[in-house]
Image 1: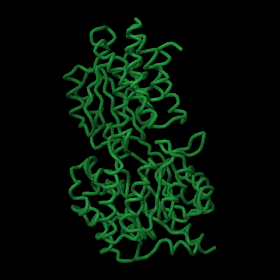
Image 2 (image 1 turned 135 degrees about the vertical axis):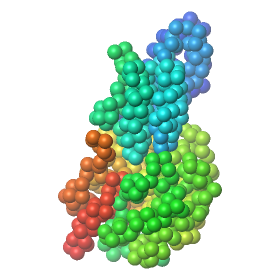
Image 3 (image 1 turned 90 degrees about the vertical axis):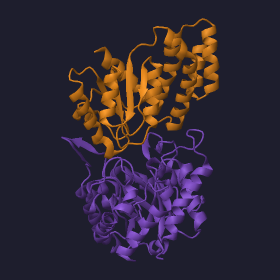
Image 4 (image 1 turned 180 degrees about the vertical axis):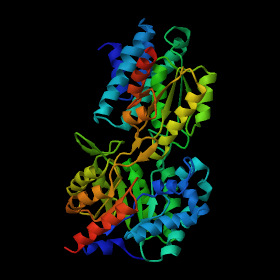
Length: 211
Length: 297
């Protein structure tokens, strides 16, 4: 098995230390940054995403895989900043006002960094004003809103309405996700996209921004 | 103290209450505020909720302490008031309703993850639940309901904490499961039957499931439980997955829907039936009527 497959397998089994070492080994073997990212790290997370969606694996496995992905990214990040792999633009993410749950949002952050975005993570309990202001000031391309509670879902709508009132030209796209949310809900509150999980969030953002 | 175990041993089914959180929001709790703080600041609303469920026919009502563990209260900077908040939650109901109802001390998840997935140690988590359950028990709850758990390890720690405070306090251990092609699992990957056996071995008096994906799935869950344990079973379903239409959040499963499903749930052998997110006083009244008919068979 080549090193890229080994990285992908180790990532899926949550072996952070090995992923970190093998990513360095792959670089030393002369494999380019983009290939390591796409064919090892992101490929591994895509498998994790598939297995999570089909209930073959559960949240702990996803968290360990994400941690392993982060360990690989620690090696690649400084190199990405020097090369053209980075530079897909800025993404602002956070859990909406009133919501204190950030596991899913953190996973989205790791995946977006892996895909080459500069991630500005505003944390949890983030007001509509803060989302809009940071996104405008930083010239972000996309905002990712997260909510776990049914009681904070309406705050997603308020956040989007506020953003649209500030970003009159509609430059900034909005994607939402979180356990109680659905594609229908996303459409109803006029979000630009919905993602079931962190892996699909990256896919949806990529296609949203290439429109 | 009324003992729920004795009440259930006659074979009669008991009725529990409905949602607290969604009810508090309808009374003006703001998104982002601590629902548990209302035990100190708005005791009249907290009592109103318990009273309306008791009037609708609930045999047991839950304290407004779902997020009353020390670790959860930290999110609001209220960890120093854990004892006061949990104690007040019990006193409000006891003063208002006396011994008309059983008071069940609600103990929800800490919102934190244990090592190695999160940064909380088992010892810290046990201390957090011990402070909460000690306050609830000392203030006079009739039982403890450890609910909406998705981590078996966390549920076991809460169970150990409650039994450590008072070994005879009746404890319900209620987890939230998803249906998968391989059976029922929590989001953390704990399987229903294995979790149930483990909770039973560690002293749970009543086993249960709450929240979830609506009542139809709960009927299947109840049947699965019966293959794993002979302990009494509690089911508190939510009123389906919330839907958002034209600015309003609504739960799809009406009291009428509950009425239609009630005999299937009772037939599956459930001993305590109540509601979770989105269920109302009307849902509880409907359950009361069906349970009365069932108990008179």
